Image 1 (cartoon, rainbow, N blue to C red):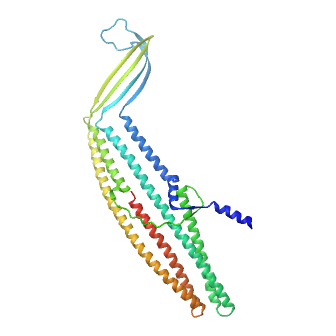
Image 2: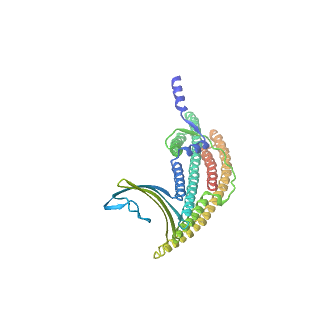
Image 3: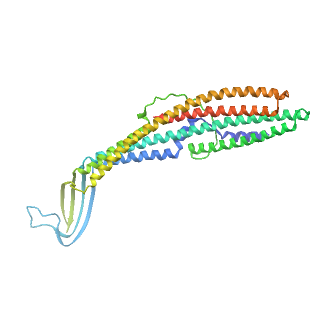
Length: 411
């Protein structure tokens, strides 16, 4: 017997108690969606660094070997022309060049700002994803806590039914109660057992979902009860991630417009190079510096169409900002009203439980004294259990509605 007891202790010791703050911390470390979102931020930052580096141009190494059908000079002839000019039909060269765009209609600066905005966009998306996942964890905690409380209530109800059955069975043996009364209690006992199985199944399903969400795998744990959340949030729509996301989208469209307009400006590119030319055992040095200007004068309306398309996208982005504000304001208002509703329902459920408890106590006395039928007592007991369940459900529904409002208003 002692050996069995030790085994039970070892088995249960592996089941950890999990608080909501711990669950949210594990979510940060393990959740795949958050890990992917973090990589998206890093990638967008690297693209921003890439755009910055492109401003400085590039240095390239050059090498070539060319065979001609007749001898060529190692370097272009330039005054004063010498009679002893080195020639060869096979020329090889080695050198280095530097190329940089000096002006392209502010396209590079627009692209840098655009990449910076994209990084901010990914960071805001991460915040939104994190808030939504945290709310999912909070919701699952509330659902599991509700079911666990209901499970305890159902077990207490079953125990009460068993006591009634024992009392009635004894009275039946003495000829004071009928067999029909025993059958009614047995039927309720069977139904209560079905309810227990259903609640236990739901708890197992929700725990598995919570485990996958925060760990990415199945783990055994017991959740600890939630603390009351009565925090009052200072509301500023402009600071909320959804509004920031919409505003960033509008700014990105604005910078895209600047980038498209840069096609109307000339491009200035600077190139310089140094080369050593080899042939027939001789060597010549060639140094060049070139400034190129190109200006697209006419493209049959392509650029104009691009500008008009960008203007439409700008208008759409601004409308999206306004739409997001309206939708978010509506959601926040509904969340606040739901909290008020659940607070009233909690008061009502508390009052109903007191009435149900008193009724149950009276019906129990009347039944045991033989003044009432078993049906009235069982009905009062069932209503008392339902009132307890309703109270717990309402309590955690209120908690969920507060979590939802915090999710909507979290900056």
